[in-house]
Amino acid sequence: MNDLNQILSRPEFFLVILAWSIFWKGMALWKSARHGHLVWFITLLVVNTLGLLEIAYVFYLHRWDIDGGKLLAFLHKKFSRLAK
Image (cartoon, rainbow, N blue to C red; front, side, top):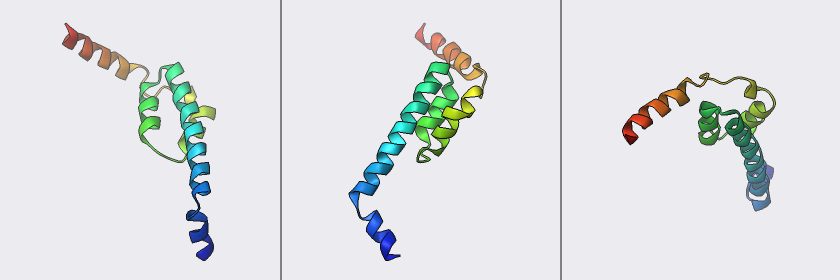
């Protein structure tokens, strides 16, 4: 237990974890935005999984659009009425 406390008390450990998370989150957000996957984009932005969900999205899950564009069409329809 002492070894774990020593590791967690070092700021270098957290910097490595932070860099890892930012890199993978950026890759996944970029890919989801390019594919127009709004639900994936919001999920990846909000949920913090230390890069695990982001890695899964980048290599495997990007093939599926969760809502098939229905959410985006719904939001466009609702907000275009408000703008008029």
